[in-house]
Length: 182
Image (cartoon, rainbow, N blue to C red; front, side, top):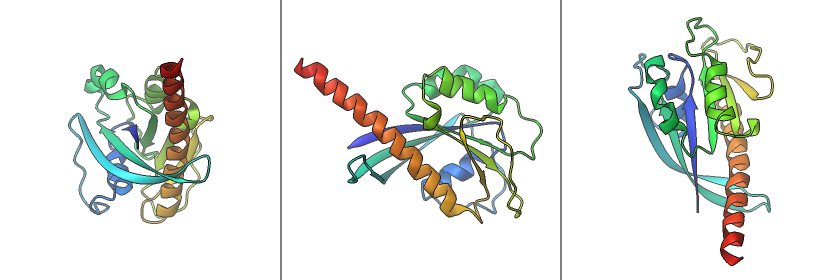
């Protein structure tokens, strides 16, 4: 069985906990009031993922729902350690975005030497309209999300991210096994 660590990061009030709860099949909190995450919250669940040879593989997923509070930047190295993927969540309507989406990308993806394909960007549009929001990260897949209207699109994007992570995990396992044999 494979284990995937995915960091869910982004500016405060972006919807990281809402997305994490949605992906982890936690309780429905769409209509709840905002409560900032204190530090990090880890959700664990299993997910079936399609492998390269079209078999379903069980993956243990750890979603690290990280606070966007700029006072916790000193904790980013611990949060990012051995992450296999990153989901950056932001609300385009919230103009106070410090640190910026780009800062999260640079630290959690670029500095950790992850491929852009192992990252998703969720523009959490709370309006009911189907808005097309320009991506602040042109080389990263951006999903304009509204959990009430686009839940299938969000699940599909997450599954594709897990498939890419599974390829990375499988390749790492193969290299490790070869080094043991050699």
